[in-house]
Image 1 (tube, rainbow over the protein chains, first blue to last red):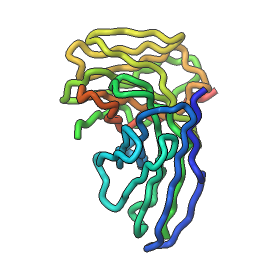
Image 2: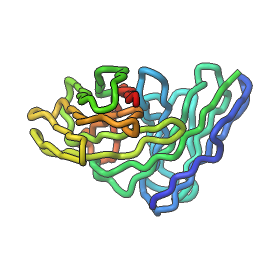
Image 3: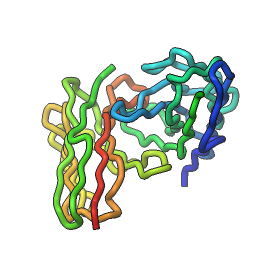
Image 4: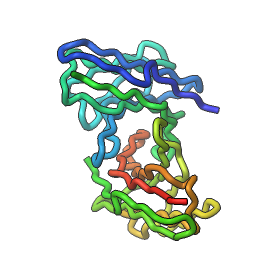
Length: 114
Length: 112
């Protein structure tokens, strides 16, 4: 079974703090994704990566950055957390470049920024 | 951004009833996926449809991709409490990359 793990299930941070969210997948997948999920808005893509050290902006990259130094790990960074970044963050991975391929999701990190 | 609107947003039904959830867009998609998300977990893929007019059945779940590949529906027969969850549709956009555009979601509650 594919396993996607996220470093924290719940996180509470203060405004202005730097926040790191880590995601690890164990299936040698090429693609990795970071989404945020908010009620009534569905999942919105923040950043994705299709190879080590490669990254592409998604629909809402502002206020976020990412890092992919190793194939299995994709990190989401909030340089200076703000209250409007309170959300559920979901990481996903997929095998290759076909758009119909399955994305496998982690359990999510619920971030609260005070 | 290609928008996928799902309806209804919330649905609460009794066990044994049938229901249909809709996913609509003004954009054409090369493929359409349906995911189910349970509380505290990430979404899990239920099905992928890639051909306009395609119908796929998964036990009590029937998925249809519209002829024009702009819409899809999920029909559940004789709903059970285990069907409770958030149902998300997601469209692929033929860019060659595995980028999906997710719908707004339908939260289904099946009451025993």
